[in-house]
Image (cartoon, rainbow, N blue to C red):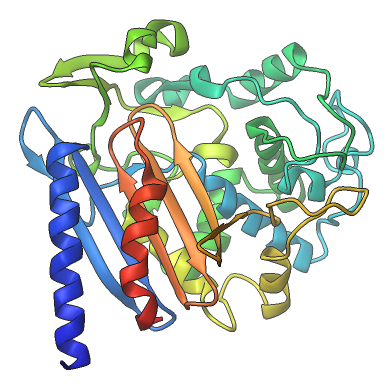
Length: 364
């Protein structure tokens, strides 16, 4: 059997499995696999809009939520390379008004070892229609005033914090002179060939943006008015509850809006020996496992989480929130990267990638 015929059979098998997924578990899904040469597989199926039976395609945008954090981390490392940020300086060098321990460093923020709390961020969002009037600085100041105490000492242990990554966005603004979205679009996204039509921090075309959904029969749906801002809740459609278009309050921890196709450009760049966005040495640092101050390793780099599946090490980031769920991975030993995005709040992306990515390992 030829390699081409083998690959065609894999494509057909994976497509059939994802079609079944898009029928039974989610309104719609996107999935892309890349190696260092190109995208080797791309899928889009199901619906971006259930009520109007609008099909999901490769250009449909979705909320990326915490996938944004890895992009924020990459931007910080760009600034490290330029000498504008030092990983082990105190954060007060860049954000002097913070209420937290003066020994917190950018490295701590990147690796989630700052001890900064992580209050539930589900209500940290505003309607897209309110965006022009939204005051991000005021929203952040209010949160900091309510959550002034750290949960642990800097470097003591891993403690995931959306608030910590929001502060990294403020560091980017302080040292670059650009707003966070402007910096990201000019210095990172544009460098890998992405523009506002592909990915942005706002919805540029409602016709190309998917609706986000939550199953009507679920724990979150039963308590949605307690967990979420009521104005985010939309109407019911078939077995789903919709969400109104919205943006997270802190763009640096969860603000990107794009497609699996657009985000795969970042994975493609990180598979190169010489990435576009920063040097090979900085790429090595990006994937370097971090440690606590007592030398204990944590399953975190300066922007990626680390996991093993059946002895295979990979780097990943998940994203999820009101109406969307996603996950992206890099398998350095296999030479591939993958990303899945769905327009459903609660969904096990890991189980799909564990099974489906393995089909493409020989093509890295």
